[in-house]
Amino acid sequence: MEQQHLLSVSDEVFVNGGKSSLTLSVDGTLQWLDGGLIRRCLSVEKEVLGFSKVGRLITIRALVQTGADRFCFGSSSEGSLTRKSFVFEAVTEDSLRNLCEKIQGYIDSLGRPKKLFIFVNPFGGRKSASKIFTNDIKPILEDANIEYTLQETRYQLHAKEVSCSLDLTKYDGIICVSGDGILVEVMNGLLERKDWAVALKMPIGVIPAGTGNGMIKSLLDSVSQPCTPAHAALAVVRGHKRSLDVATIWQGETTFFSVLMLAWGLVSDIDIESEKYRWMGSARIDFYALKRILKLRKYNGRICFVPGPGFEDVGESNESCVDSMEPLVMPRQHGYQGPNIDLKNLKWRKIEGPFVSVWLHNVPWGAENTMAAPDAKFEDGYLDLIVVRQCPKLALLSLMSELNNGAHVKSPYVVYIKVKAVILEPGSRTDDSMKEGIIDSDGEVLARGKGTYKCNLKSLMAYDKIQVVVDQGLATLFTPI
View (cartoon, rainbow, N blue to C red):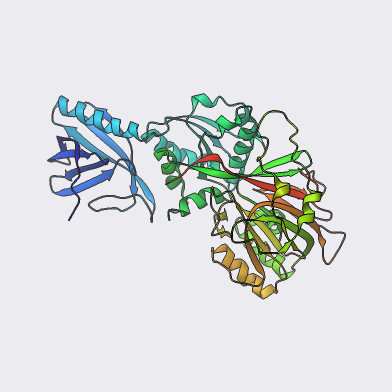
């Protein structure tokens, strides 16, 4: 039997030539008879963006599933979303006032953002961010009556600079219309503020408009939604929030805050070196991955780690690595000073090389088409360490395909570990001691070793020991759930 909704308000309206009661139930469901014949409904929380009134006409603006023609429209999982308006004419001034007050009151009770600061990266990915904002995002924000301040990024680290000094009291959230790069800049900027603890409560949203889009893909995929600008924008409008772990990566007094992933070996080689084939578009990744696997490199080195529950027996015991640890020394007096963890009293393990590839993942998807860490969580206080050691080329081709599809790979060549802290000690290639590797995090090259692609460029850190510790639930994101 269909559940009977308790009524919050019900008034007579004209809609599509017929007369009907427009009902808003206490659970936020709008119901009416379309043309006096077909019963329709909308969820204010999940689908309604906003409304306006002109005379006695009330226009409800919603984002619904494309092609929906059912009792209720729906916008949650499969399929694309379409902006749709529903026009009702109130019978009397009293019913107009009553309906508008109740609908607006329900929307206000949801705690949605009212003003946003928006970064648009016109240079990232396919250089489509400005077009995506104008065509897809701006109309949704206007339908939702959300005000915004727009800032196009003009150079690398521009978003970080702005985030460091932005008056956050004026806004309810920060949105990045870009790939993952602007998100990382914003996060690093907020962490360097004097009021970082308050700043990190500011929710950050991401609209997919870059090459990677790993963060928003992870968020939307967690509720089986496609990674589209419309679904991402709806998540922002609805205003739900969740916490996000942040990893502190340091070497000496140099620090970098990561929210997505760190890679060394095969994955970072593909990510960075494929830049020389950027003219191929997104196909450059698959092309260069095949090339790199057929001419496979292996790297000497060592990984020390603090395992999470259930992974205490992975690798070998290694208490000696504590003696070589460098303390986390921030070069500034203000801002986030790193996680408050006594690393020396934790139980450390190690895995010796050679290695084909090493990943550290904070969220499941490293990019829109690469799900290497299906078990990674947003706020569990652990990173997923994925290690590929000696591996035949044919097995590696299959393995990489499975990893990209999010499969739990059962292979003697792959090790999955939940970790709290990591010390990465990268070495040279096994076939040439004069050539080293590349370490990248969240699209930023942290270190370029000898003989690597563009090794003449200055990088943030040296190709040497790098330490990583994760802090649980430090940042805040807009989320679809």
